[in-house]
Length: 620
Image 1 (cartoon, rainbow, N blue to C red):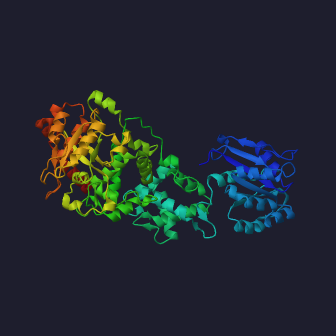
Image 2: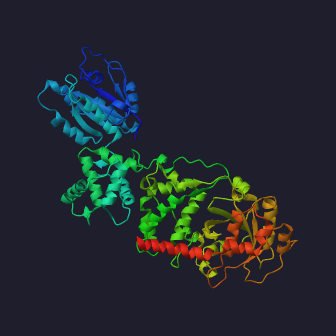
């Protein structure tokens, strides 16, 4: 909403423009009236809408057309004043006077509402509305017409209230008077609001949802009888406005149409602004992208409340209760977005079921990935879903945890982070993509079904270390050594992948390690990929085992995704453990009992977590 309102009064000489302003300020008719009143400012605390209001007078005798144009450019609303006791004055308005033509011709500077003001009503016994109404119907920019009297103060306060209201709660963006219906952009915004408020996604707002909506927008619930009265109004006017005693989308839109037709635009605007919309019915930048500070060497994660919210959104759209989102259910979930945020590559970034649908775990993983890589995008998405409204937070920034600096984690030898990044490097054809997909439980046979254009360079899922659920994010890096930046290399653990069946494959890993990681504190692991194939001698001065021994690295870890079942996840647990405990001595990490302790219960926890979700789902 605007922070102030600027009202400009124009009209023929002697119609009482200046008198109207002076009568408002002094609350009495002035004995002497100057040619033009100086600009006045009414403080916010004495205006009905609590917004500072500037009132500007225009005098043809003292000001030029150029000055008029400048004032029009700055005005938020223009009052065209005429005298109701002067036939010529009324005719000039009815014929679209010079002023009205001038305003409409230069309206492109700023689309401003117009108000017709019939002054000196104390001098006549009849109304000029019969003559004025055809003009109002001809020009949709005219919000209303007010007849008043500066002499006896009739409707003076109302005039300036309507002018203020025309700026703060304009009809134009919401409603088409000719068609007597809401405009498409307004319907689109209200439809999103309805879907967010429909917490169980059954297509209606029940009493509980209506009360939550009422409390959210107007800070007060509706009494049971008031709720019934609202629904009865809808029932009397349309057949399908109420279903199963709940308000349908058609009924919701009808109510707002009714509010506007009865001059209660502020009701609809209060709702729209509460849900983040500006005067052009676009979600504001402040709403979508709240300020959040992220110091260097810190990462961003979703907090507990954010995961609870996202779980409720999943549950709301998982209509068949199969713990996965079908393409239709995903489409329904994102109907509150102006665009589809997730493409086909998402299904190759996170876990899916046998049908290729997003599982509950895969869904949360994708949100975790977005928050880690692009927190602004995550804030935007949470804004579309209405997180701050449903959870009654100041903004969706309340959903984000900014982790502490990694150097502090190293000093304290412990971390509170839940998401760890592993950069996967290797020569072309070494098996990097297969390594990523294997993390998502896909063997080589399933990987071959992935279309090239749907390939993803990320894979994210959960692992369990000492019984704690953590997210491991794998990022396949481009193999060009010369284009690796410091930001590209920033991670918690590094995977150097080579193909045991390609004699030139390991050389790349050795070069990358010596160029970027030999003096780094980032843990590195060498992966001997395609270990089901015949291992050949590598064309490098040292064998992979000797290289690792020389640089105090783990021996190359054999890995294959050419299996009948889902590939083993042990290596991913090891990677997560190394990312969590980079300070631990290599001897500890090589110790088999250490890995046993780290990975114990991983499968049990994974199954238990899924079972708990199914149990919660049944309770709902």
